[in-house]
Length: 483
Image (cartoon, rainbow, N blue to C red):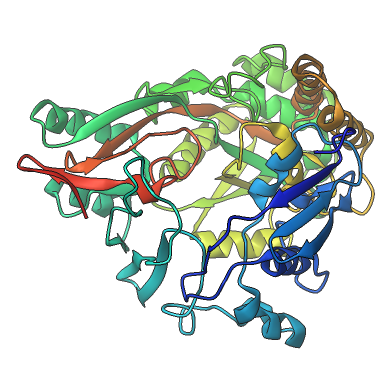
């Protein structure tokens, strides 16, 4: 690292090859950066690999050396590279040049062809049934005894029709763990009984760091629903919803109330000083009346100044705990005089509506890529691709978003953790006052696995179990770890 902390010279491991046997060199690193920054691709990863909105400068003086220069101070330094997958230049450069990169690896031409540096490769995809990964014989890591990794010969992801079917397979012993690892509250009691009989292993990991959120379309509000743009309306919703009722009725006690995107599970960066919205129906109605939303015809529901009912829709995932939560939110808002229509959809449909800005609000969740907020700038910055209420703004749409932009740029460059925490606490305060997204509860994460699975190190961040697949193995009573 250079004295100013801006330039890093990396020496690549020698003798590393991709899963197809082709050598890994600095050219692959340069190609990976070229792909993520290619304007035609509009990669969601691009904004998370920039500092002060500018791309990194990357050079390769020889096949085993990469020199990376940051365009501005960035205290986490090379942690930024956690956001970059390394791609095989020899396979993908022709498609990048031809403008067909997005279709280079698909469900028909991907399995068995995709070259990677990880412990497994995709070998088969059976639509609606399974995805099969097989061991990468060229994987470079060894265990402490010098043995080759990964331990497993393969991993099979079975495609279930829903969460009920997935849990039933786990209870029956036909699968070893859940893909997203954590249990639903309604499954906890059953799994605990199986744990007591040593039929399953159960681990309580802590408070989750990826809570679901109700966010509003602040990029393109439908005519007649301008109140969605007003922070007082969103504050009223936060007061109207009883978070403890959601904890107890939906999560059966296995959750905690939260008021923002950073939960108590993120012990370093959580600020308890961020605004809170205790359940207060009278306060909610007062806020709504303050922006001209009152019961004008005596039917118990609110109307705007034109006499139109105060009403909006929530898109959410059907057949999921999100839909159950949305139903509780709907009832609590009805008591405040706000009519809500719940629209259950599958994830692709929700994503399509979001990308088209064709929605009032969405109740869904995002996976944080790291605990450190500097690694999630695509969420916090107004120009970010996952700034979900109004993404990829050319300039900040509001004064408070401009404030957050400025604070986050200061935060990532601040020299000490204490100064960074102070700045990020201010970001959380501003977010909590304006509430582009409303957070209600964070689940307590419990992870169940088959007792034959060994080498697990459960984590709060996704993938909670499969983050270290190269050292996972299976055991039985009569043998050492085996594949």
